[in-house]
Length: 442
Image 1: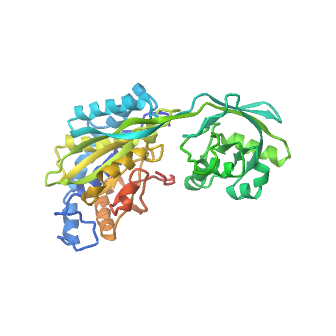
Image 2: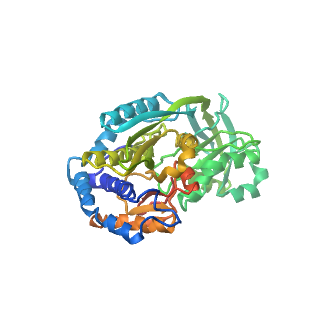
Image 3: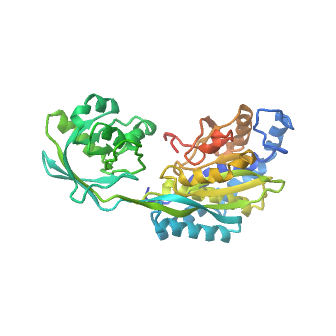
């Protein structure tokens, strides 16, 4: 999303405070993390009492982040990066410039153990692209190629269109799809249901002999604005070009088809994939005072797509995660466990950077007490989504009760996220933001 208007200090910092509260206060237990199902070294009541004693600390964080010198700091930091660097597509020079700048910024902030961890990431470029309806009338269409799509031949693909509203309809009309461009006009119910057409639309169309696929943008609202995102090919299935079109054009072609009109489109896409590029996950820490080997991880991804600034997805999430460490440092606090910030790379390509981080660190997964990511946009939050044991949830609820002054106390179920799912599968609790009116998808 383009960084267009100034987010208020409250909007940014309420989220920051949630991050910090969970990070700092879940670092209360003696020895191993207290979320396990086994017996604890302390009673739950003792843990609750200790959490309650952090009320003054919570107030100091609210005052600093919402009213004090840190007000709007994450916005200002983020604005400087996106204005300076711009979009940060996987494999691009812009992304590597952003990583270099962030490494310098984290060191300048006085954080500890600032370093880069090498990873290999995809390098795809969209090139020039266009789609023109030739029949039943001339109409130049707005499109955005989907990540990892192949390109068309230089002369493009000119073919008749088959409009479908679902994969089931495509299967029923399979013989009609051969040699055509399949247009998906799937209804939008929620993101997780609709995004499967972006992810799998090309494969399903190729299975029935289509030459290309065009997918209605995965959005509940449109101002003639096509979206982009990653899509996946499947071994053994021919690769065909695929792109998103606007909601308006998908609906228009659906109406035309319902009236029996023959629709012909000329599609040109210069998309190309290159060998994997060298890149980095960016890491910084505040070392734990008592159990430095145990880790609480906060994160966001630094990469973005190439058609915006990546301010919301996920510059905001990356920068508020950084701000969580800055607040702790500004207040002279030292958590008992190491607080680690990771700015992932190549999340948009399917969590590539976080996957390689997990492979590098999974041998020490028992030392991770909590993993968190912010990747829903920096809006006013209502609470956290959390995955963990029942005892961990009880403790999380106590932690969140400290946020009553700003009315952010919900602890919801089924927290997950592209960059942290590896750890969840290992049994490490996680949390991520839940926002009013927003469907959950990381």
